[in-house]
Structures are given as C-alpha cells and as structure tokens.
Amino acid sequence: MEIDIKQIRELMKAMKQLGVNELELEGNEQRIFMRRGQGVPMGPTTVVQTGPASVMPPAAPTPAVAITPAAVPKTEAKDDPKATFITSPFVGTFYTAPSPDSAPFVSVGDTIAVGSVLCIVEAMKLMNEIESEISGKILEILVENGKAVEYGDNLFKVTKS
Amino acid sequence: MLRKVLIANRGEIAVRVIRACRELGIEAVAVHSEADANALHVRLADRAVCIGPAPSAESYLNVPAIIAAAEISGADSIHPGYGFLSENAEFADICGQCGLSFIGPTPSNMKQWGEKVPARALARSLGIPLLPGTKVLSGPDHAVREAEKIGYPVILKASAGGGGRGMKIVRDSATLHRVFPQAQAEAVAGFKNGDLYLERFVEEPRHIEFQIIADGDGDARVLGERECSIQRRHQKLLEEAPSVAVTQEMRADVGATIKRAMKESGYTSAGTLEFLLDERGHLYFMEMNTRIQVEHPVTEEVTGVDLVVEQIRIAGGEGLSIPADREIPTRGHSIECRINAEDPETFAPWPGLITEFHPPGGAGVRVDGGVYGGWRVPSHYDSLLLKLITHGASRPEAIAKMERALRETLIGGIRTNVPLHLEIIRNEDFRSGRLSTKFLERLRGSRAA
Picture 1 (cartoon, each protein chain N blue to C red):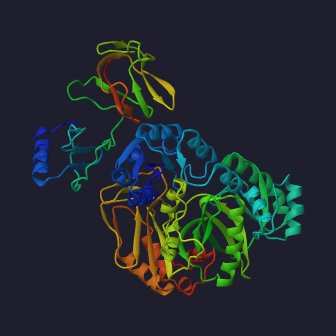
Picture 2 (picture 1 turned 120 degrees about the vertical axis):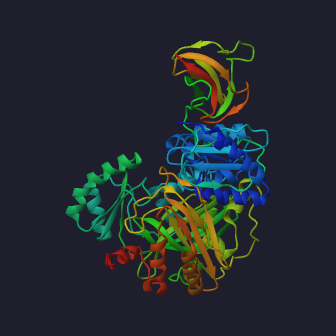
Picture 3 (picture 1 turned 90 degrees about the vertical axis):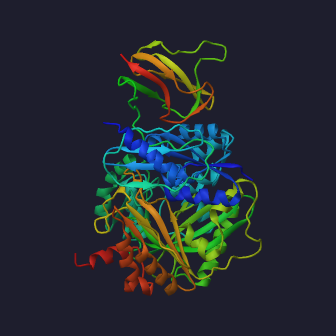
C-alpha cells in the first residue's frame, strides 16, 4: 500500500478548481474518499492504483453527521504502522467514565490489556461497557465525552503491544 | 405533525420515504450498514447513522441499534418501509415504549392480521370471502380428513410463512400423509413455527390485491385493486392497476366488505388484502400485509393519492388528506416493473459496480430508485434496484410507455432483468390481459433457450 502524496495534491487542486466538494475513486480493492470544506478534515484511507474516477457533483450542505466512507474497521495510521483504531460496536452516546463524578476509564498513555474496560456507549439507558480486544497503549481518545457515536466510529487510537 | 422520521430500511423504499418527508417539510434520518455507506438513501437524508456491519441481522434488523440511532439523532418517529421490521409487532411495540411514533399499523393490527390462520378466521367473521380451508392441523390424519372435504388439489401451508416459502401442492391423500411431517419440519426451520393449514388450490389464479388506508379513527378507504399475477417463485415482478379481470361490480362489492372490515377491526395506516381470483370470477381472501408494499406506486398513479404521505400524516395525528365522503375514482392505467440486479435468464443475483446509469423519463414515466452511476450494489440484500412505473389513459398506452421506458433504461456494469421485462411487455398474452400466476412459467417454457 503506497500513498502517493503527489496524486493526492493534484486531486485536491482539481477539486478546488472545479468547485467539487466530494470525490470518490475506486480501484480493484482500494478506494479513496475526499471531502472538501465545512471544517471536516480530509480522510484519505488508501490511494487508488487504477480505476475510473467518478466525480460527484457539489454536495448539498449537510450540516450534521458526515457520510462515513466504506472503511475497513481497523485502518493503519500514517505516522505509526503499529497504530490501530478501536471502533464502536454500538450506536449511542460515548462516555469516558463510569459516572459524571468518576475518573475516566483510561487516559492517553495508559496501558491496556485484553478485557480492559475503555469506555461506555450508552443507548436507551443501557450502559454498554466497551472492552478492549487487544493489549497495548492508548495514543489518543478520539471522541469527546457525551458525544454521539455510530457503529464503526473510531473511539481510540492505540498501539498494539 | 411529525418532526423527524428515521427510516428503518434501505434502497428504493428508503428514498421513497425521504421524498415524502421532504415534501412535508419533515427531516429524514437514514440508517445504514457499512455496506451501504454510500447508498443513495444515505446521501439524500438530512442525517445518516451507521448502525452495523453488512449482515441484515446486525444492521437493518438490529432493533437496539435502530432505537439508539433514533435516540442520538433526535427522531420522533420511525418508518419501517417494507420487509425487515415492518411487520414485526414487537418492534412496533418497542417504538411506542421508547416514545417513538411507528408509522404503520398498531402492534395489535399486526398480530390480528399478520399470521395467516388467525387472519383467515378474522376475515371470515367480518364477511370477507375465503378459499375453502382449515385452521391449524393437528396431524397428517386430520389433514387428510379435511382435504377430502375441501376436494383436491389442496395446498399445505405454514401459518407463519410468507413470500412463497413453506407451501406444498398436494393432489391425493397418500401424498398428503407423506409430505405432512416434511412440511412441518420445514416450517419450524424457516419460521420457528410448525403450524400448518390447508386450502383449496386454484390451478390458474390471478393474484388480486386491494389497497386500504385508514386513520385508525373510523375513517378507512379502499383505493382499488392491483393485479400482481406475474411472479417468479411467488416473488412479484410486474404489477398493474386496475385489473382487467375485475369488474366495477366486483370492485364495489368486495370494496364495501373490506372497508367495513377495516373499520370494525380498528385497522390503522396502510395495508393490503391479497386475494386469489379464480376462473369463475370469484375472489378469495388469502392474507393481509400490514405494511406499505413495494407496488404501491401503481395505486398512487391511478388515484392521485400519495400513500406514504398519508401514512406519515396518520402517524402524526393529522388524519387522511383524501376528501371525505368521496370514493376515489381511478384514472387510467398504471404498470410497474421491478428492475432487479440479476441475470435475466438464470435469475442469479448480480451485485457489483454500476458503471453507468441512465433512467428513462418523459410523460407518464416514474422511476422510484435507490441507485446511481458509480455505486456498488452490495451482495447482502435483495436485488431490487428500482421500480419503473408508467401511467397512461388506457392499458395499451401504459404498456406502450413501459416498452419505451424499458428501452431507454441504461444500467451498465451489472446484469438486470430489463430484457425479461421487455419480453413480458411484448408478449401477446400479456397484451391481451390473459394473465395468471402461471404466466412466467409459461413464458419461460415457450422459449427456445
């Protein structure tokens, strides 16, 4: 898997020039999805090697949740090849601590083991504790306490040990 | 009026409901599996929530995920579409308990009308004509005794079955005795319910169904019938309204009975009563579908009523917008072709990337679709891509428009059943209105290949 920065830059330029807000490219097994504007960071996953480009017309303003690209559940982070993401298995509200007054389950830098409780995703008054399936270290907590999460949303960036 | 509807479905029906919401100024929330992340209904909705991985059991049938999605999106109601959870009384009940309006019939309506044996009993008590048939059979001996009373051929069916599954045609008592335990085992495997019943089997029936819509408050309307005889393995392929085989007298007669029945049983929202029409012009009630159906557009075209809008209005406590004390006259004729992602010869499903898409247009042509060029049709769900609907002043005109529209339709990159529909629309028996549920079998049988 190679990331061709030059190709990405060209695509970004073309999108800006043509006033295109969303671009999706698909090759045999890889796909890239880029969205411009509205303060949403670009989220390329992998670069397409071949394949026709299908350019979407400028998207109508969508203020709320962005369309999630059809991503593989755990994607490799660019800067650390051993880094991976822990994703939400539920739809609901993300809580970092067992109750508003308690300390959070985990903080950045903490070591986690298989079965460590990382957070709660609550739906319909049911508190679902999310347990880690890996052992490693927490690099980043990606969702703010009390925010809504969907199935597959990245919750934690971690390195596996 | 409702404020924000969550559509617990996908594909063309999700798009259909989003359109009705838009027209009413209501926000629409889409839910989707990971496989549908770029689906048309997701793109069109005001908000989209990913609820699970591709398998339906973990996404579109995942009740907690759907309710959670309603919670985080602030939806006040759920439209279940058709299939999936649309006729699940427990789900409708859960919605109510969670303070969400369920856009459809009540759990009680579903329990009364949703299972075939109790539905038949209820229909009989309300004066709706039935095929001679039985209640739940206690065993093969009971079955044989009943079959001899009804007269062969008979059909052995699972009470909890549907979509053509769990049915066996039997022509004599020895066979009935032999297949009874098999049928029971299949019913348990397929529907978790081994109850079986028998009915007289009509060899060459037409499938005729009546559309009803009721506000649950005493106002129920019958919006005419549809003919859905063109089926493959009990899955409908092409539908039309009205039926050439139903006279105004039959329509008025059965219509009045159905209307009274819906009022008396307290039915709410949209529903369809399915009948068989035999060779002698008798209609026999088969089952009721307590949901909006795939083929609802043909009824909309000939009546001018928007059924999904009416459903949303009813759920929001607004009542029907159809003027009271007026029987809706039907205007002209409408035909619908279900365009599926499948090989037109073998019917093998054909998921994959749609490389080009050009839907037909022009006067009297309506496309209710869930696809676009560049979208990859996933393999996990049913193969329906879009519905092509035409409306003309007469049946020949609707047919001419459908032929034209099919010829204009371009869906590249995958195989579809457009060629099959062209064959049907050009067929002499079809054009003359000589239809029965054996139509497609005959069409295939007479082909050289």
